[in-house]
Structures are given as C-alpha cells and as structure tokens.
Length: 231
Image 1: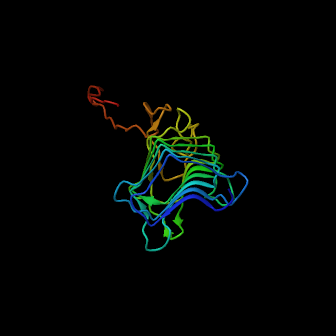
Image 2: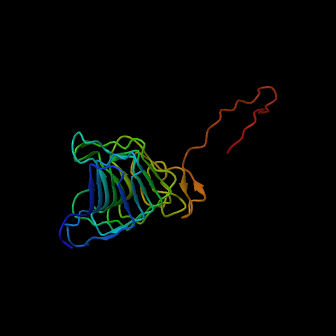
Image 3: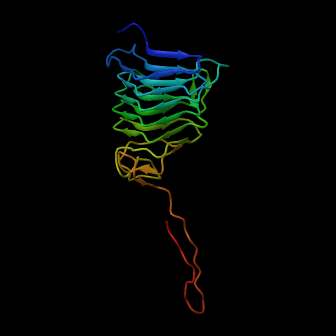
C-alpha cells in the first residue's frame, strides 16, 4: 500500500511463526523492498516461515543478520512457500526470491520462479559483515525460469543445494561440470548434484564423474582378471 518497505519484518526474536500469508508487492514501486524479513532470529523453539505466497518484491523473503553482535538468523525452517516475480530495483541482490544469509536453515518444498534476477541469492556479506551459511540446506525445491540464476552464491564456501528440480531433466546449467544442463543456471560453489529429474523429485540425475580404474592385463595371458562393478 506504499506505506513501508517490508510486508512482515521480525528482528531479534525467537519462536517466530510466519505462516500462511499472501503478500504482493508493486512491480513498479521500488519502496517494496522485502515481503518477509527475518533478521537475527536465533531459533531455539522451531521457528518457521511456511506456506506463504510472496511475489512482486525486490527480495520476496530476506534472511539476514541485522547488526554486528546480534548473530545470524539460525535454525529456522523455511518450507512450502511460493516465491515468484521478484522485481529488479537496482543491484545484484534485487529481483530475488530468497536473499540468504544465515546458518542451519532448512529451505525445502519452495517454488522459486519468474524472478527477474535469481531464485536464491547468497551475498558475500550482509549489512553486519561477512556472511555465513554453515549448516544450511536447500533441497526438494522447484527452481526454474528465473532470469539469471536459479542459485547465485558469492561466498567461497559451498552451499548444499541437492536435490532440487531445476526445470529440466538435464539439471542446472553450470560450466564446466554440467554444460549440457538446460535448467536454471547455478553459480560456482553450489553443490547441485544429484538433482531431481522430475518435478516430484522421485528420480535423480548427476554430473558427478564416474570413478576411473587403472587396469593392467597379464603380460602372459593378456587376460584382465579384475572384477569391476559400476553403480
């Protein structure tokens, strides 16, 4: 309604439940910064952001640390949401389904689609300093049709993002490991393999290399007497 930059904002709290809301930002008004913000929410009692429908914000959900010394958002379950049509209002972090800076977060069963930049954005730093995603898992989500990346990770540490559906049976595009992937692209430092080969995540594909074997045949018999099992 033009009265603020965030639909729902929770800071410095525990036992937070943000469930079952529908939030729609303005596709033309830069004031709509974030649909849902959790900042320095350190969960000890099962905090959750579940089953929300959020669209039209520059960052549909934003998870971060608000100030130095307050701690990262930690231990929150973020599941069953629909995060679509994030809008670009300037900057690489905008046009995003989920802005992610936090530890031990469970991100599952979410649709990330139609965002003008990326489905998930992981910054090198949040407003309070260097980012940390230790223990965070992104799995069993539907990540497709986001303009630049399905997941963009600027950190040197690797995000566990497996398995997910990336919009195509061939998995996400990534060079050099999966150049034949026709799904939403991923940046470096995203562990996406194995991935789901159907939208229900009941079958899986992989770009992991097959183990190699060095076989030396007998010089006398020329018979290779080494059993090999490929799985």
